[in-house]
Image (cartoon, rainbow, N blue to C red):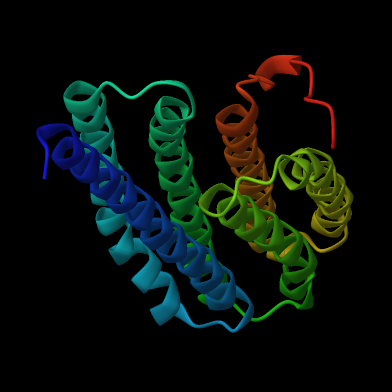
Length: 230
């Protein structure tokens, strides 16, 4: 084996390991998001506690992925698509870590709700959760697979559905706070929870933007032009 082929083999293994860690981190984060909301709607505080406990492991994932990315850049000097992939992987891990932080926020608020008598409005959280969870799953899967730019572009529009659902539910909860002041703390906690969910939709959109950047070299953040669809 020549020295160049040996280096190439090491480089490819390093990229594969980076991708595998992003997949594992994404699975862990999706699981935490699901547990946090299930802990609320099922009134299962043990699930909420597990989300909080898992946050440290997710933080470590982000640190490890950043370290791997920097090592790949320093050792192999990747260019073009490979360089964009490494940079984007580091950015995706940061967004995943922030999703985990939002899940922890949901779990902590859910624990407070679970201490009080059950209110039917808790179940109103499920529809917006399903919208955001689907968005997050598709964004992660898109980045980890073939980097489908058209699907990533579609996620930009789908995030608006999460935003609209958040606004609609926030108005309902505000009216309920006025009509039922006895449970105002629970409604306030639900307001925070749906805000956390809306933010998760934003992070999913960011991940999709990283897919677009990786595959097309176009940065669409802050109103940048979208690439043309095939």
